[in-house]
Length: 67
Image 1 (cartoon, helix red, strand yellow):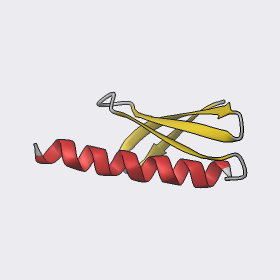
Image 2: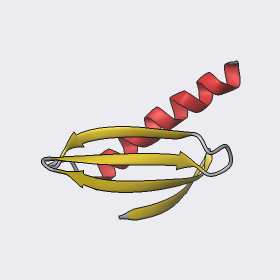
Image 3: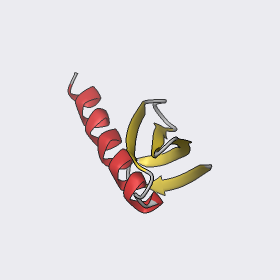
């Protein structure tokens, strides 16, 4: 399943893929193309997965801006 969300950091695309007993969420920042991935148990809610990936994406964007 794919989703798009507009946030304070810009537009972010999310992709959710079930891998056995886990779900992989990928978040892609539209403007920069920076991508992060997180894996969680299948019991995790999509909202939790989205928050997890968004947090990782924000950290990565901050690290990129410091370089």
